[in-house]
Amino acid sequence: MKKQKQTTSVKTASRPRSSARLWLAAVILLLVVAIPIYLRRSTVKQTGAGTSAATVGINKTPPPGPAPEGMVWVPGGTFWMGCDDCDMPDAEPAHLVTVDGVWMDRTPVTNAEFAKFVAATGYVTIAERKPDPKDFPGVSADKLVAGCAVFAPSPGQVSLENPYAWWRYVPGANWKNPEGPGSSTKGREDHPAVHIAWDDAAAYAKWAGKRLPTEAEFEFAARGGLDRNRYAWGNDIKPGGKWAANIWQGRFPSQNTNEDGYKSTSPVTAFPPNGFGLYDVGGNVWQWCSDWYRPDYFVEQAAQGATRNPQGPPDSNDPQEPGIPKRVQKSGSFLCSDQYCSRYLVGSRGKGATDSGSSNVGFRCVKPAA
Image (tube, rainbow, N blue to C red):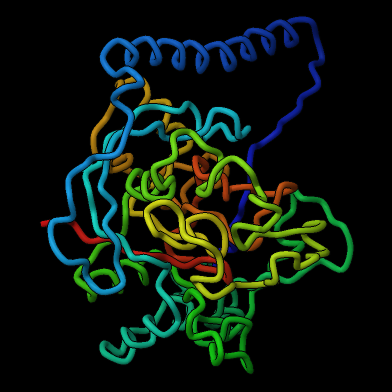
């Protein structure tokens, strides 16, 4: 029942009441600014000595055999992970990472594919289950109904600090009924399945003989062989004057001008694939990764120098919502814009409570080479 928050950074302000507090604030500010810069610079020195620009590239190992149905070979290689110019502290600093080759779903899992899984297993998604009263102490029983968070445009401009202004909990909303009772996926069989919680995605992956990608695998794949570009398709938000992904145009969250042709999800092959032949690795829907989320994880990784096949931190900690376990999400969604979220930027990161989906959250899977 947890509504997803998508934020770029947190701004805090304080008003010192004495010169002593002013001095203390100055010292803290110096430490907050100086330490990450020092770590970043020292990391560049560490990695630069043993990993020159010549080491960044794509493996030339051929695919290990015929492609599994609906999957493409991502050859692996070494790349700069993260984003130093996105104004997103949790995506800093950029650091060198090596990943092995892996088969990856060509597209996010579609409604048609998820329906096959449900028909074969009888699986019931978290959004379809009545919330357990033990997980929501103090909430009256009549309020504990199955449902999920659905985007609803605000009637006018609202503060972007309050996501509840454009999210509403809709009883009966789930992957079969994306907007709630009365809606369906008919005619949207080739759209990504949404309202998918992390546990739902992991259950599908296990049934399919696959797994969820690590954050590093997803980002390497999404970059499509491009080195330190801003987007999965290059550095131009509209290459050739055409939108390359399903993202928000107009004034968020009140007015979507629909320039890309879609106000909600789009067919998973509606926009061109990236250099590896992968669709929707930027925009359309958020996609779950296997990694736990911590905002300081990239700083820790960078301090180690170049890493190979990182699996994420051992646990989750989001200071914005302490105590709520979260996993990494990648790709951004149809709700991301240059005014809010902007996490279609290929080096950026998202996050989500593991027991929650929403109308813009889906997933895709990977399969190891052996």
